[in-house]
Image 1: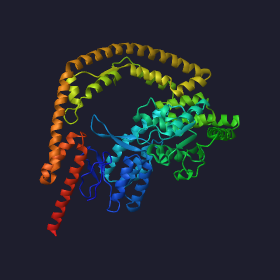
Image 2: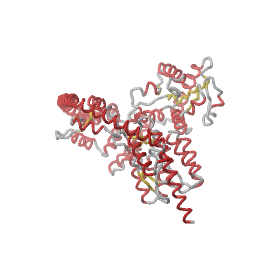
Image 3: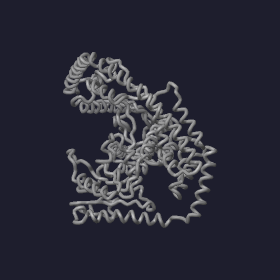
Image 4: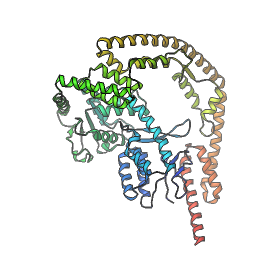
Length: 576
């Protein structure tokens, strides 16, 4: 039976021959199984290795090779979808489950992706249920990324480079990129430079901002002072995505920059592009001239496509009427597209901005929007649970005393018995303020005239003042509650700290004792029967990543797998 690894944690799956689904015994993830043959098993393992190491482009190439052998395998199409959206799975330390993250967001819905549709068509009912469940998670992540990225200001230039080398030291590329960023910023060119642009973001939150920048930037600069840097996983992830956005009609351009290397050593995907030598005298001036020329050509094309004012006004009026009609019959997607077309003709059309905001609410009038604000501002006992950063910091500090498998975070929190959430009403009121100040509403108020302007200003004044007053009142109560909770928390920590510390130390001693037992068993595995070896494996799983327990567990798993193979061979020989 071919070895198949878990898509989430990479553990070896145990499954029945002919099964279409199974559950990983290590991470508990339910998943589909591929129809691997002896010819495709190695390819499938290699493709999964690339995917789990974020080398999605290479993974796609290998999965496509597998399809030449097995054309109707839904699992391969699902794996292609994971690569297309850059899905990786990370362990949630609290639940020990593996959750998806998205590293290559796209505007196309997961549900509309051709690989998802093909996987569903080829699946049986049990596989479809798993794909639907996973697709739902991915769609939620995608929606969140698009929501965040949609609020970002557009960039002109995206600098793609490798930040650190294998030793963790800053690369020459990063230093050169920093100088290019400084010079471009000085020239008022809005530039995405990860070292600066993402410095206040958590690593897990990078994607929305990278996605927004890749889609808005007109120019990408890809730096390399070492040939291998162009192929570094995250560097390639960025320039490959940008290349896919260059369709010839949007004016996007990628410029490879090199220094101290042969330009012919550029990746083949970049080799046809005009590259610039960063070591050449006058390089910076050449680069700025090239970038400015790209923007000038883009603006010329835009101006060439401008319609006569009378024609543009007629088309704009037609689209506004059609959009309003669509929103009246709840065809909001169609209405939103029409409002976008209106803004293509007139970027100062207040009705179009207001229409786009109404579409977001699923309504067709400003009065309906106000009803949703009224609901949020009701003086009902409604709140949102928020984990205060200060409480979170103190909780994390005490939770560092955990000994995974022996004395866990929940055991520690049980010792404290203190509420850690603030119940905030102000969040609801702030949400109304944010909605009033959304980009669409701000632009609508800015460009509105006549009765529409009066209506919008009246609505803004009424709801902004009300939301602001309620928010200030709620925040005062919440500040007092926060101080009370922090005081309780400090008292509980002071009271429980020594007890928690002692239990942590005792758990550490038990883990060390179990580890020594495993070491003794590991020295002479051949002398143990299979049951003792299995128990050793379970104990190593409990010990987790303490010292070299992970490596020992992998070796023990190999022994168990070999033993099971010998049993199967023996039974087969007896039957023959």
